[in-house]
Image 1: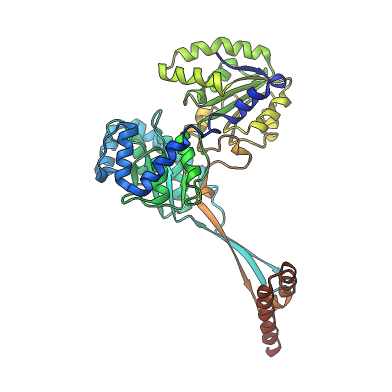
Image 2: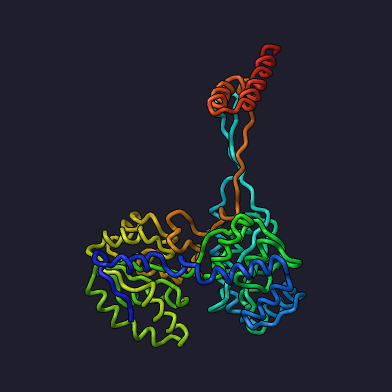
Length: 441
């Protein structure tokens, strides 16, 4: 049964469940994840092999954890030339989009005479990219993660992705990695992958930052290794809002609404509208669309739309916009008579796809936007993965003797007020030396 709520009449419990999504509560999985992290930290590669066998029922050998060159070559032969071309086309669009994100390498200015300040931008030295596989294979995610990391200039890029039942990695994902120029790929998934990247093992290097989406176990593990490594964007179960008014095509609305719901039972797909007539039309179309899917995807949709997803009926379109900004969705689809103006009113969303033809699917796979987006309401503060995800800034200053004389009194006064006599004397000493140098000139 699909959830249906009138926004201004929702109970606190219903609204809290919708707002929190599946990923907010890690209490069930955290004890398991803690055990996994501890096992990997102590046992390294052998622990990964044991956990993979115990949890995933997949037999691996320690010396086969890293994908070999031969496996890359086999993958090239397993996919069709047509699929490879489409992967290359997607890469081209992703590459073009993300190259525009590169900031200037450095900037500087003279704040006061003799005081130059600025910043320089450099890549993070090592990153671990996580490409999930649990409910399918995701070569598009491989492209979305590897491309901006390469553009940013990260020297050491390592990819972890779960093996299939036969112990191999999805062929299209391996081809996608190679298209991006990445060959350090490891057959490890779940919480054990996060632990391996955070602490390092005999085969998998420790990294400075982890980037990539995952299920509750992955998201929970990211939280637990925070401080050991930067766990990056908290990209958890998929979520979307289709925000539309009476002008929207009901079939487009129905298809877009179901898009993210088919990701998994913990996905959150919401239809938000002020049009009762549109809802009636959409509800007539949805059963037929669901019936066309596999049983697994049907189960995902039916579970998701009866728990974290559903229909939100608003008193007017502005109330729908307010709800979107409060919810802060990963994916937002806007179909309305004033869609560009409505987009300008959105301040919290991972991505915004505007108009009847801007399908969420295009954003997921083809047009170049990055589909690794903030979930669980973190779009209020976080951005989509991009080149800047893999960069860091260092500020710098060059102070001349003239600048020291001008700027030092400020530092001396504030150091005195804040109770740091050593700081004050250091600043004063530099000023006195500068004054002598200027006199000698």
